[in-house]
Structures are given as structure tokens and as C-alpha cells.
Image (cartoon, rainbow over all chains, first blue to last red):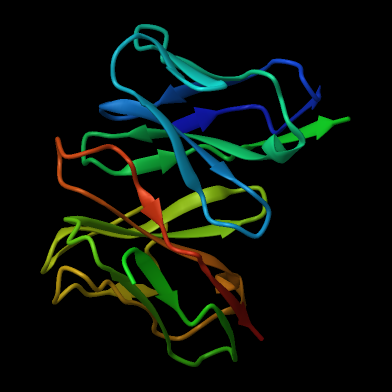
Length: 109
Length: 114
């Protein structure tokens, strides 16, 4: 079977750093993606890791360890607008994305 | 307008009726997908298509039918709607392998089955 595990909810303070973890078990693996979704909106792409290591895009970074079937999304200098749901997703052997259940991030003043 | 669009954006229907949700993309992306999103379940794949005239089942295909006669369109039909199909439906597209890893989502269709 295929499964992705991520925390259901995380709370952090504005200006802080937060890490959202994702572990996966899938049949076939091309890479790990992260998507952001604000309430009432559509998911939007944040990052993609095909190889082990850290990818940085502005305040957001994403990490992958293929041997541990593990990745994380790191958000720095948190802003109120970062309050949203964050989904990890595996690109599997059929080249389709399988999503986790999402982590709801609440940024407090 | 360039991008990926869905229609209708909101739909109320009754149990047993047939409903078709439309999805259109202007990028000529090879891959197109239909997901449903329910509270606590994230995004679950219903059907996907790797190219025109090629479709395949996802995680939750029962009760749904898709077709892809043209690259840019990927309609989803609920043959006989049930209350359990009340959900938010997202269409998405992505380019072919090796041409980019971003998957683009439409704005969603909010479907209520009474």
C-alpha cells in the first residue's frame, strides 16, 4: 500500500522557524513535493526533491532522505500569511502524485 | 485566459442525478488529474490521464467516469450522485516527464449532493 504520514497540526509564533515532517511508504518513488493550500483555495506548488539533500527557495527549504523515506519542509521567518495547510506528496512510479493528509499551520502574533 | 479552469465552481444536485464537472487547461500538458478533498482526508486521486485517450484509475474511482478525447479537456462525470460524493473536486495538470515537476491545480468545484 501507499501511505504518507505528517502531523495534523502545528502552531508557531510569527518570526519563528517551523519544521513539518513527512514520512512515506509508496510503491515506486521519483520524488517528494510540497504544496501549500490556504483555506478556500487551491493547492500551490512549493518545492520538489528528487535527490537527497536540502533545496532552498527563499524562506522555504525542503529536505529529502530517500534511505529513510523521510522529508521535511522548513519555513523560516514565519509570517501571518504562512497560516495554511501544507501537504507532502510522493511522485510515484506511475508519475502521479499521492498526497498526505496535510498539516495545518497556525502562525500566532 | 491561460491556465487551468474548472466549471461549475459550485453545484448543488440531488441523489441519483448525473453530474459532469469540467476541466480545461491551456498549456497542452500531457498529464491531467482529478482529486477530491474531504476534511481529514487530504487530496485523494480519483482518475488520471497521461495523454489523450489514456485514462487510469486512482485511489477512489468508484462512481466516477472520465474521458479525454482532447488534450486540453478532462471532464469528470458522477453517473448517479450519492451524498458521499459531496466534496471539493480539484482538477490538475502537469507537463510530461522531464519537463517540470510542478502540478497546477484548478480553483476547485464545490459539489453538494442532497
